[in-house]
Each structure stands twice: as structure tokens, then as C-alpha cells.
Length: 164
Image (cartoon, rainbow, N blue to C red; front, top):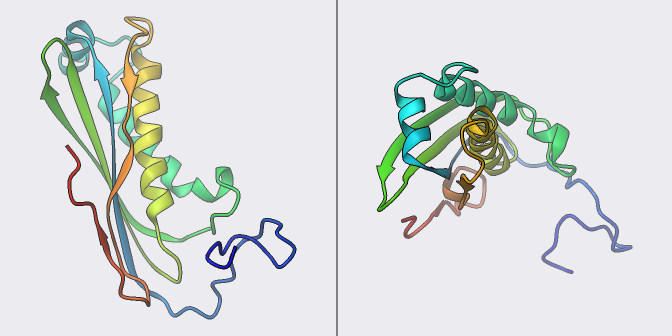
């Protein structure tokens, strides 16, 4: 358990103490996706979903979720986020459409924002599902993954090699 920092000497879960770490600029980019049928794609792009503008609501949901990550993931620290940007991109597949959702989260602090970025894209995808489930419930969410992380005192930035 030497490499597992979220356990104390008794093997019990703990929140890592980051108080001695210096503050640095930290960023994280995460992605998720939701696969939808042609009808849902048209309803979203033509703003015909009765609950409202799906992407606008999903964007706000993602931002709100990033800000609340510490409240739902037990060992996450409350972080003062400095910026959150959610973006969407449609990709045509053989018989369906895939909505790729990316979140860029930024802070100046002593712990990273990977969980906030992952939470943001997850909440955005779930919001799309929630708003469109009356049309069709066969949507598929995922995969969800970290694309990039920068900052910190170790100098160990992370960049995913491929995310297609």
C-alpha cells in the first residue's frame, strides 16, 4: 500500500494532506460521449426537445458538477476553480451520431483538477440522456477518460496518446 496515498497506516481511507504542497497552475481536460439515434440528433440540433436547449443545459450541468465534485467524490478536496469550459462536437457514425463532450478545468492550487473535469463531462452526458430519454432510451454513454493534465510540483504532466 506504499503507493496508495488515500490510506492511513491502519489501511483505512483518508483524505490526502496537501497543505505542504505549493500552489501551481493546474489544468485537466476530460472527454465523454453519448451515442444517439438519428431522431435524437435531429431533435437536439433543431432544438425540438420539449425540455429545452439540450446542449445549453448540459453545459451548465457540467459546470455545476465540476464545482461540486468534492461533495460527491469522498476523497476530493474542495477546490476554488478558476475556469471551466465545456465543448461539444458531433461525429457521424454508421447508423448513429456520437456527441463528444470535452471539459477543460483550471485552477491555481495545491491539488489537481482531473476529477472535476471527469465529473463535468459525466454530468453533461447524463444531462443529455435525461433530456432526451422520452424520445429514446437506448442512448449509450461513454467512454469517459482523461485526455490531459498539467501542473503540480512533480512536473509529471499527462497526455493521453490516443483517444479515438
